[in-house]
Length: 243
Image 1: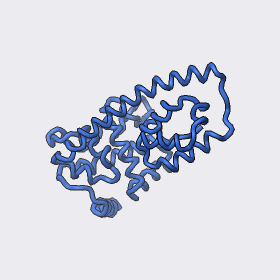
Image 2: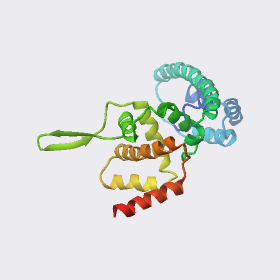
Image 3: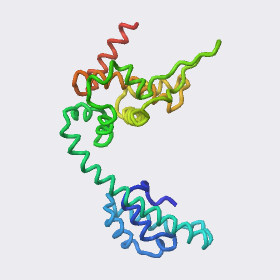
Image 4: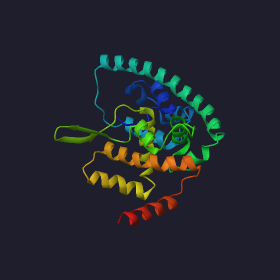
């Protein structure tokens, strides 16, 4: 039964806490569901309450009473823990936001396509702000694990994923590049080209992140914000020289 799109949102957890079984949820009115969603500060409570009420009153598969009782108790225990976690995350967000906005590099990271208020601070935290830390872009590619590692044994040679790396940085870069493909045409084209070449989704995103590191490094060192037109012009000029 799909009642919510996000398990981690507060309104979902409060609903599950109030109605731990399908029977309990189906017994309440649409207005009671609406009140619970509003308590959880749901962004669209009235429409969602109607959808939930309708879903609850459709024919459903029924589990045995023993299983329902055991699973609902387990669910309530997990919900209680998750509510504490999301409150802690919200508290951290309140601290991170002003720290990020007062950082000298915040405009650089904020200018990145679809970086938003979560990915931009995360990239800054993982990348750092010490310009003397990295020799060049290659050192970041190795540290982040976006650059593949060549392997050879006899006549067999292949590049494979780099395992010895800073995994939180790699994850942040890959998350960012996935988002970039939704806005930047060049990023989507590059990703699609890699897929056509036979790369898996993860391999294609990692390859795109490898390209992204060079762009980020240049921006970071020159302290300039990202601009799509500037990058596309440089990419076109490079393509002409290569031809």
